[in-house]
Length: 218
Image (cartoon, rainbow, N blue to C red; front, side, top):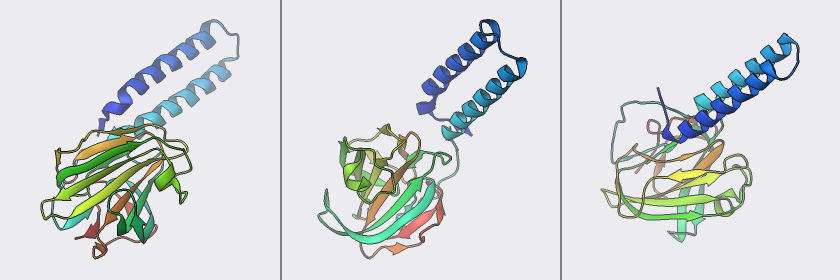
């Protein structure tokens, strides 16, 4: 298990703040020892929660051009046929994965191929499971064309808590299946749009592992 680069600055600042607060309580504020110990315990727990949020597990990715891998750890909250209006402008099969604050928040490419489209949208911060979050929240839209010519669209969506989306690809880049393309800080959601004839291998409520769970077959 390693620490993701997005967390290093936050963890360093949090450590400085926590040390500073404890120093003030210990030497400048007269409080009972049990109060200081309680505050210290809370700060340690909070720091460990931040630390686990930015974990970035290492594992072997089994690539297969017929498979669509989950782009994130989380829970499947939507499976439906819908009209995708930003890029395809036609019906697609949508699978949405909600990431809670306890999930790994590294985002991974569902397929290998070339990035055909990449666009960032500023927006609102509705709760990630809100029906309008896909079109009104802060988000990025990325389309990868696979080696077999099939295009898959995936969209990072900020939630009420997650207000910092990071993406590391641009149009024309090549990306490997399971390769990291972004990170969303704190709770959030990723939508995937597939061809209508894709075979879905997950159900509502299923838990996914980014880069490991095969959510569909092309």
